[in-house]
Length: 177
Ligand SMILES: Cc1cc2nc3c(=O)[nH]c(=O)nc-3n(C[C@H](O)[C@H](O)[C@H](O)COP(=O)(O)O)c2cc1C
Image (cartoon, rainbow, N blue to C red; front, side):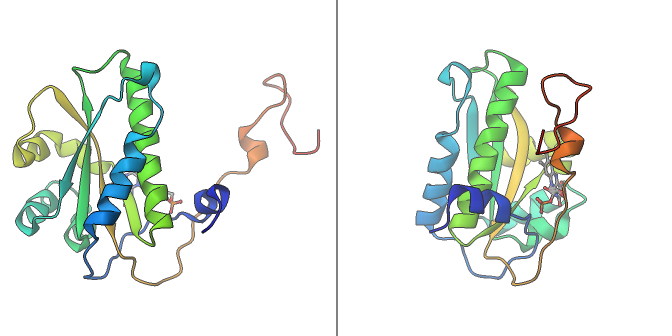
């Protein structure tokens, strides 16, 4: 088993999946990791919809520019903010982000590939209607998951020194200062 740091650093968005289904056990592990994310006042403002039904996946594919990813996935998890549990919108949204990241990292550990889909929020109303979600819930993301097609995946990041300051905002963090 890899360390948490190795898992974080090796995670890449995976957008192509094999036809192999994701097991119920793995789905439950992913959901368990999601619910153990931190949240303000421990209010756990999230709700998840596990989607495996092929027709529902096809319908959801119509709601995004990234239809090929959705159609190719064996499992989608729609993530909702439960406005009845909300205490501070920004903090609750951040907690949901933490729960989503937990799921992405769990996928790495389980040998699954996943990608966080945000563009689909443009058609949130259509998604809510397909999934028959009451108005009190706000769509935050859809995660596409599956066994990854083997291929090299690269990504890039800004350097730490571009992003970080030491003590005051005019003093860049260089890693050695
Ligand atoms: C809020 C958010 C929304 C995203 N929406 C999409 C999306 O709609 N479609 C997609 O293919 N990837 C989406 N991504 C994945 C990013 O493109 C990806 O994380 C980024 O390019 C860095 O690549 P990496 O995850 O492989 O390191 C999203 C990621 C985040 C955090």
